[in-house]
Amino acid sequence: MDRTPGDWRPKLCYVESKAGLRVWSRGQDRRIECPSSAARTQQNAEKLEKAVGILILLMCCTSHYADARIASQFALPARDEEVGEESGLESQRAFESLLTLDQQQAGSRRLSFLVPTPSMILPYHNGVILSGAPEIAVYVIWYGSFGAAQKAPIVDFLSSFSAAPTVAPSVASWWKITAGYKDSQGLAVAPMVRLAGQQELADYSRGKALKNADIQALVLSSLATFPVDSNAMYVVLTAEDVVVEDFCRNECGAHLFTGPSAATKQQQLPIAWVGNSASQCPGLCAWPYAKPQYGPPGEPLLPPSGDVGTDGLIINLATILAGCATNPFNNGFFQGDASAPVEAATACAGTYGAGAYSGYPGQLLLDSASGASYNVLGAHGRQFLMPALWDPVTLACVAP
Image (cartoon, rainbow, N blue to C red; front, side, top):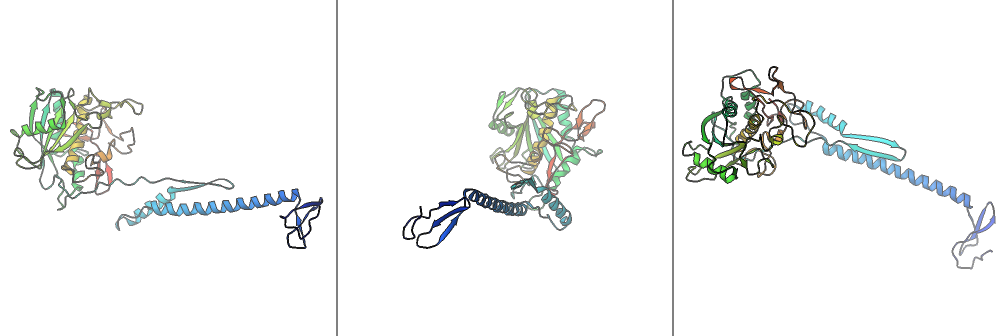
């Protein structure tokens, strides 16, 4: 029924014909045509279509805005004027590979981007490095039972830094990478390492389970034989039946330093220890010469000395030598927490040759006679596997 204009009611529609509906509007003596059910459905569909179109437009605008924000955040600037053009090209390539916008379907847009791995940087903390001298003297303490066949390759390794020049790659050429590490006075790490003295403690005088305090005590006792030299390294090598604090849990070796005392003539002395992991954790501390417990399939490589524990010890000794020379007192070159620093060799962990990636050591040299894998030559024709070192000049890991 009709409503008179005087009735105060909401707008109502009433059926007049199939063509449409009419209502009386409050306060107005005029008729308003209301759409039919079919017409209302059509109008709603049109409104929905417009809303979807607006939403798609907003998504596109937001996507392009995100592109610009991400590109500006991750674009790689040129490092310096000398390599500006090259770095610019690298930045452009990085930008091109950074963002990929994929149109999957109408009204759907996905933003995909690859965040580039930041370059590893080992900042200099303005402290002491083992620089300014022609060589770094190394004093070795053999703790536990070492056979002659185990000791010989280690002695030859420590004699390879100052040995007569050999065809590269050599231990000496590998060590030259450390020349890029310079102290606040511009002095580089000593160019050579020399085996300056040895002491044997085959009686396990402090037992077969050592703590860091025991390592320090062994070094302090050795000063009755060895000279006190703050620019030297005092290294304890432990036999395969000796357990050291944190060995095989999160360490294969470590370098520390003593506090000033009467025994050290009030100097801090760099000290270190490295263990033979053959019977404890070869997969952790002698890889790639031993298969890790949790790792990629495939057989391990053959060690040059024929002894997995010995060659693993040499790898870790090389790692410790490089770390100690460039960060002896935890205020040299390192990244991260000083109590667990990332250093010259650990910055490149697992890398021994070109093309290395997780589970693959990289391209190595192969001895055709023995089948052993190595990457450098040393004294008496010895073959060794040296870890890649982070180069402060190129800001990259460099394998021998």
